[in-house]
Length: 185
Ligand code: FNR
Image 1 (tube, protein in one colour):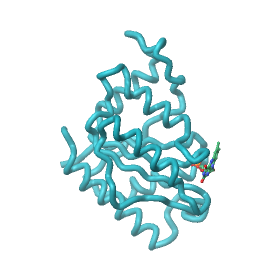
Image 2 (cartoon, rainbow, N blue to C red):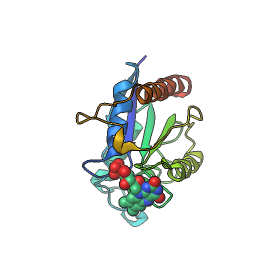
Image 3 (cartoon, rainbow, N blue to C red):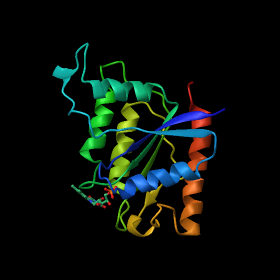
């Protein structure tokens, strides 16, 4: 079987190291997973007043894209010890209207990264807290806190160290097994 995986990257920055990390995880993943990177930078801030029968088009697009996948990979930096607002906003939008959350039941993995040594622990676990109420089975092990992102990639975005490549390959392989075990499709 092959599984469609939505990738949500918590940074909107063009040169985002977190995006490079997400691309590396996708590159190194088994062929059973097919990845779709989801745009979250064009979403108006969630406001229930706008959530009518004709919600903003980017909201409808996001909801349809998440509804169509078998699993979700979150790859995020940490902003002020938590999840960047852009990612929180996307999560909120696709969790509504009430009772129609498209996240429900989708297996997920959380990978956090940072340029420094702390590696986004705060963001990683704040995100895990959200996934509980969203009823997403989230992979516990292996955990993925990736530090020193600035030194992991070459100019082509390839992972330079064998050790890091092996670690990221293990994360993606474990996630593939997790999705196969928990998918409701
Ligand atoms: C940060 N950064 C940061 N880093 C960290 O490890 N812990 C933190 O709490 C924060 N807080 C924070 C707040 C804000 C508003 C910004 C803009 C940045 C640094 C950030 O994680 C770092 O720049 C990452 O490299 C960002 O990821 P991208 O954009 O390279 O993917």
